[in-house]
Each structure stands twice: as C-alpha cells, then as structure tokens.
Picture (tube, rainbow, N blue to C red):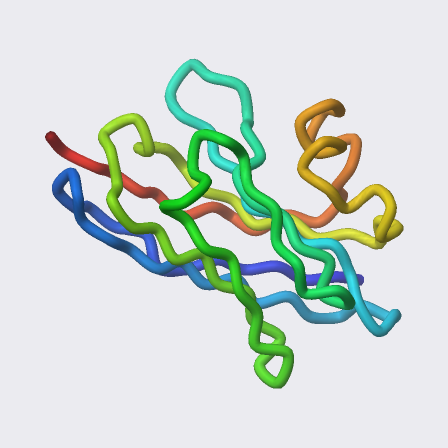
Length: 133
C-alpha cells in the first residue's frame, strides 16, 4: 500500500516563499504518479503540479506556473513543492497524492479533466498554507 505524508505548510506574507515536502513510500513499481492538489474554503480540489517519478518532468497549472516548482529526491522518496511569490489566493490546504497512473495519464490535462479522487487513491493528510496580504 502506498503511504503519503506532507509537511512544510505555514503562514507567510504575500510575496513570500514556502517549501512543501511529500514522502511517498510503499509502492511496488519503479515509479508512480505524484500530484500536488490544493483546496481552499468552499472551492473544488485543484491540481497544481504533477510529476511521474519515472520521467521527472513536472507539469503545472496555469495559476502557479512560473512561481511553483515541483522536484523529487528519489533517494529520499520525497517530492517537493517550492512555492515562490505567494499570493493570498494561494491560501489553501495542500495535499499530496500518489497512484499507479500510466505515464500517458500522469499529465496536468488529465489531472484537470477528471475528479481528483477518481485518479488518486492515496492521499496525505494535508498541510495548510496561509498567505496574508
């Protein structure tokens, strides 16, 4: 069973930075699809970044492109989300999710087209990010 756990949330002022971490373990293949989602109060869960750990090429939602960077450290089974130039609208609970998606499905177009919980069965508990103006 895949296990997922996030850390690194907090409160920052607009323009600041935070780095989230996601440890993914327990998978039985060489690589998996891992995505960062966020959900603000009263909003739908939104995919913001995705990577297939076998290809190492992250993709981003337009809302975060150029500000957020997803990376991985395979030796530590850890994925990161570096968030720069944070805005108040980035305030949300951030979740890391992982599953055995094919490389062909592990893309932002798929993440945005299908319900999050239909694609990913394994989720972390979430970490809160609050950006004040």
